[in-house]
Image (cartoon, rainbow, N blue to C red; front, side, top):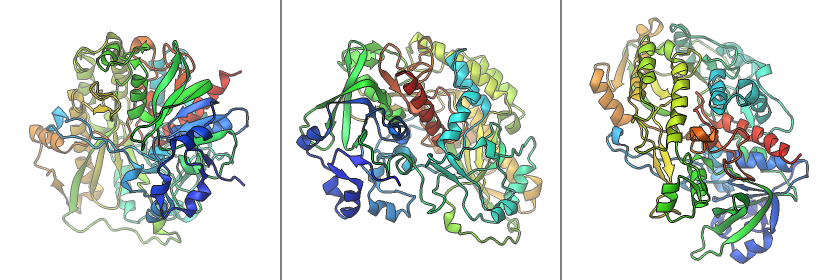
Length: 607
């Protein structure tokens, strides 16, 4: 039986936290002297960030006892009180996420956007929507195309790590039969030492059935056996839930709780100020207690590597604070340049969405009489939806692709972008044109529900934003700019996505029930629809990627194909920031996959 991971920052075990949860404020503050005494002088690996990827890597690196690991996490543990209040799933305490807001978005009527990322041990896997999907083979083959001919990040190269990362639990027989839920056991993993779970609830609402049947008849709609096999269409997906308790399964429960190893230590409530270098070789990190008014810096040595897993928002900040990033930005912030790396903080992407509201005008589609033995309380998130390529969304896909193909790669990038960033975008553009013309690349996600309308989500964006330090205050939260709709192609795609929702709600199976569009209204078209989109678009589904992209240096990349930071030694990155292209899917499962693949790459460097 696995027991509890040590929390070095507080000098207590998680068992102690359980018994003192009524006074969590006592546990959120650490004494600098106490921390200095408990943290060793050196570890084989120092991991910056105890989130989705960081804890996965720490667990896997330490499981055979060969290597020592210290994880440094800025945030704290979710207390028993918060877990209980959220039913083991929904940790809505504001302390569990960062308080960051983007700068005003010019093409969204100067609205700002909440940058919601997890701030706790477990990171964003503790607060996400728990959807377990992967995207398509063509999208991961695109990762390899951007990486170069020797890349192992194609579909065949990542599939084994998807399987290793997640333990799959199939649906109950009665639910599967009633709702036509199918799955491919060969596409999933069930390794006994993997404790991140993908689980189906024991119940579904029968009102989903007529909505599913109507979507199944949409032109060009495929129905794969399983949505994780590399193909898109209409399919059911599990959620990240423990199959026994139906509590949230996230990186803390899978890669941190119930583990006691003398070689695996985690320190919380501490901020990494910078990576330490000998020339361009990373030797360790400097960090401070986030709650001390006048903190004493602590240094720790990494004998083998420093691994940054701080996430798409904070990984570029840590790099830039350490002297790795665009030279002009670093000089303006008075930070000595260690490596001039223009791609740090660039290429920022996220999924965009909005809600189209409907009501039934003539009753509602009748739900079949289904008898189920399961518990409705096990339903935690959307379990069925359509993942659709642009050729199935609109007949105008070719004209959209042609307009994008004809663009000057520099035309819609930030002014004065480095030539390597422009070259990288040109490669991205060439790939993206192929995806625009591909039926098997997800440009739209419509989660189905037992009622009309809902979310319309653009799964690929071509407008690239930035996340950079503030030169006037580098240690403050970074400046986040989505640059939403800076490229007009994203508006064209969102318009077509809304039109697809309209076609679905007026499809033959649903026509009798006279779906009425409440918001924005079926009469809102053309420029008026674009105005509505600008006023209502949400440029983030909290799936930020690409600020430390895995691409060649000459294409504005930050890490190479082995996740090593260009121009440095013994420094690597493993988190969502390395993704060069959005998967057409919620990014949770992808981050687990890349963390598992990163571990094998890191271990291979020691042999």
